[in-house]
Length: 412
Ligand SMILES: [Ca+2]
Ligand SMILES: [Ca+2]
Ligand SMILES: [Ca+2]
Ligand SMILES: [Ca+2]
Image (cartoon, rainbow, N blue to C red; front, side, top):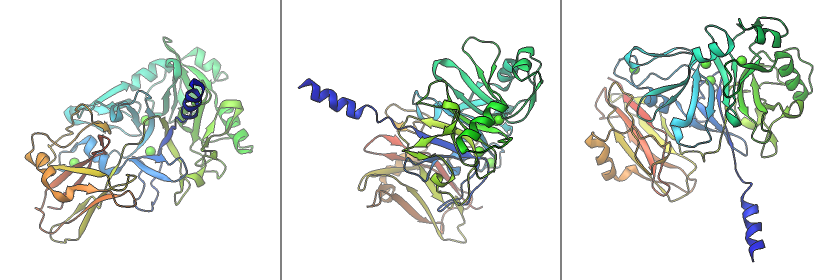
């Protein structure tokens, strides 16, 4: 009965969910945790928000950059993101910051660089600030949105108005050498110079058509991603705080309409936050979301006592997450990879630290998900050695997925 098999395959094939991963331009008070502008979040397909790379993971990713002996060195902001469709967890997540980040060894990440973590504690600059400057004949730019499109095109926008020395870009910009931050550029494969894909005027018209408004500006295009349903078109977010535009994601297809997730328009209500979000980084991800380890609070004191807590959510009731805890290898960051670890893919507990392997003998760290799909562990700060830090990561036994890492510190 081959036709029945065919029907079955057709029934299964279209379900390729692409999660929207985003960052905020500002902190927002959350239900369980405040949402920070350097964190990455996931829009749940039915609405609401889940962590993707939370604060405590950022601290592990960057190590002790300021040399104070503590992993407290998260970046102040992430303002651009592109998750490659190749899979591979952390190393396939390309990001840009809005500030310069000094790294160990005297190098820096610039706000115009697009970088990725290499899976071994290091950082690769995938597209440098000077790469974008050469492609647009500009200087001292800050990338605030970019995406690798199908066919190898690179789409991007700048965080500020920038002057170009390029006659071709000036002509595409209506004769003006100052290019507005609402402008979207495209660099085609093998091209040496970018083109203006959407002018400021076109961008504003796209948002106006989507929102049914007649605004003169959306302030800035600060997030973009390829529209998976309309090749060659983009999903855009803006920095406008107008109630018509804030938290809205539009597609450029058809001249502009609000993008839908699960049939629902992507606007502020869908995110389920306590304030309308300004989305300053956007990407879609074809990877199934990795489990996230949340730690609360991120520090405590032996003298004050009280309880610390960590948890992994969205699990199958009864399944096991093994919590592995080690001492951070200072100054770090330190990371490694091993075959068959999925999810976050990169592994952070130090294999040279006996604590890492002793973790498997701690009964409470064999965390079993409750009826709500939450596996957790609670400890008392009282009696923990002052000044110590504990770096933890979970491993979902049934699937081989690693959680994001987290770290807690005991006050000196
Ligand atoms: Ca941000
Ligand atoms: Ca530090
Ligand atoms: Ca940037
Ligand atoms: Ca921009």
